[in-house]
Structure formats: C-alpha cells, structure tokens
Image 1 (tube, helix red, strand yellow):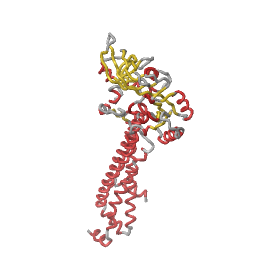
Image 2 (cartoon, rainbow, N blue to C red; image 1 turned 135 degrees about the vertical axis):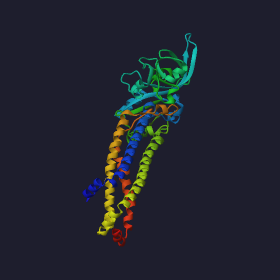
Image 3 (cartoon, rainbow, N blue to C red; image 1 turned 90 degrees about the vertical axis):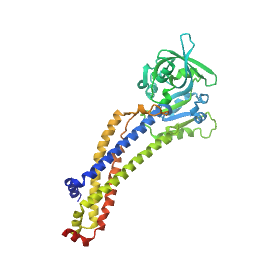
Image 4 (cartoon, rainbow, N blue to C red; image 1 turned 120 degrees about the vertical axis):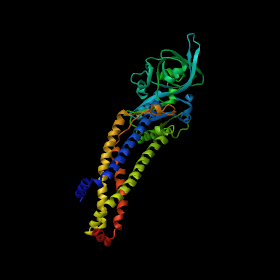
Length: 424
C-alpha cells in the first residue's frame, strides 16, 4: 500500500508539491534558526567564560557576595598551593589566576607632569609565561589594534578608545594610581605596549590588560588573586560536570564558618548567566512551536483545498465499498510521506546554510557599540546532533495535524448521496 501511495504522490504532483514546499520552507527555517541560536549560546558562553567568569570560578565567600565591587582586600591567599590542590582533585581541567582592579590612569608629559587622566578598569592575567593559556583565552592577537603584545614586565595593553581619549600612543609611559590589597595608595609606572578593541563598550571605554605579576606587585598581592578560573582542556562546557565539581569542592568547607574560605561557582551561577542561557532554550522551544502552528494551519487549509479537488475521487472510493476509515488512513499515510520528504529536503538545505554560518559567522559589531555586557561581535551557527532531527518534529506533526483535521470531512459523506453525485 505504501508503494502505491508513493507512486500516486510522485505522479500527481498537483496534490503534493504545495504541501512539500510548505514543509520544506518551515523545516529549513527551523533548522537554520535552531543552529543559529545554539551557535549564539556557545559564543556567549565562551566569551563570558574567557573574559570574566571561567567555566567555574573560585573566590572567597565574602568576595563572591561583593564581586561587582572588585573587593581585592577580600582576595584569595596562597593561591599557588590551592591551584596544585585543584589540579590533583580535578584532572582534565586547567586553572588560571585573575585580578580585577580599578584606578586612575595618568599620562605624563615631557616634564613628568600630568598631561591627561582617565578612569581605568583593568584585568591582570598571566601574559608572559610561555605556556600560559591567557593570550589565547583573551584572544589578544585578534583584538590588537596598534602596537604589540607585552613581551617583558612593566608593559600593559589599554583599549584603543581610552588611548584616543587620553591622547597616548604605544611606546609611551603611563602611571596607574590605585589601592593596594591593604588599603594604601599605589602608584606604578608602565609602558603602553599596544591598544585593543574588544567590541564591548564595557571593556573598550576604560579597559586595561596587565601581566599578573606586575599587578600583584603594584597592589601588594603576592601569591594572592581575586579569582581562579577553571576550564576543561577540550573547552567544552558541560553543565552536569561543572555542577558535580562545584558540589564536591564546596562540600569540603560546608561545616566551616570562615568567610575567607574558597567557594566554587559555575558559569550559570554568575552575573545572571542562568537567566540568559535559560532564555535561549526558551526561544528554541518558541521557534519550533511557532513553525509547528503556522505549518499546521497552512497544511490544514491545503488539505481542505485538496479534499475539495479530490471530492469525486473520494466519492468513487466510498461508492465501490472502501471503508471511510481506510480512506482516511490512506490520506494520513500520504501526508506523512510528504512530511518525511519535505523534512528531509528542508533539513539538508538548513544544515548546508548553518554550516556556512558556522564557518563564516555574522559580524554584528555595528549593532554592539552601546552594549554594556559581554557579547560576542561575530555570531556563528553550531550544528549539533539534534539539528539533524529537530526539523522532523514540526515537519511530520504539521502534516499529520493538518491532514487529520481536513480529512474529517470524509466521515460526513452520506452513502445515499454518492450515486446521485456520480450521475451528475
């Protein structure tokens, strides 16, 4: 029977082309949007993890409560020993220290007097150790605008926007005025090695990147750090894994009341990331639901039109003794076969476009000039195993629902009227 129905679909294109094209278009858009949203989710996770949060972050308990204020007086101590313990307890992860700091950047003139000043919000990371992953995590080579990366102690990078505002060029000196870990005044001279543009307003207005040891010395934070970030060696974010890690680490200190003990937080527990990533999952569900509803309505109307056009055919089949239920089932089978063909074609086209977006990406830097949170400026699609099947959900359900509703008219046909219809 299925072979017979397939031949009918292929030979009578007038009853299959329109539903096929509707399913193809709906599945194509579903796959493309799904892959795009998953790519945006991956980009957002990676950008926020690399620049600020890590896949997991370790801080003191009291620092975690006031993290937005950058309270370096509440920083972790003896971080070298803590990192060794983390490497032993959680193999497959690497750990890096960060210090967030603020202050005033002073640019001197030829006489050593202030030429210009501006507020600065900085980040200290290990930039000079040859095996350090930080230059790659921060993607410094890509965002470098002028000059070069730091090659020796005492060199810093500043945002290109801040450099233009202060009227300073790579190679010139700058003085950082800040506060040490113990609350005293700190003044440290640096050489500006280069300028950066991250594409995020929050970092491009006042951003400074410095080597960790320089800032530890400047802020009197030897063997101390505000944060320790953890990353898997394969750079793949697995929520279940990081949840297990955080639970196991925090369980060590659960019964102790010291506020300066370390606490581990996952990426989703920081700065509203749980809400942002949850919203993306919600958007995926909405996208699939909208296309399912839209295609169902269109295919329902297509089924009604098809039933009117095939009114005589259905009447003949009922007149020669074919059961109403059998006719109805055959129409359902036809719709499912059209749905499979349309969903397969739409999935192939959708994956092809998604692969192109995954490789090339879409540059949205022009839309991000006034954004104050961390957001990637190039969004890429990401093809996941579920992308190969997600299109079949609206594709098959829409054709099934549309035909099931439209085909109910078969059961309203009266046998007594069939011969009168055939006579006319």
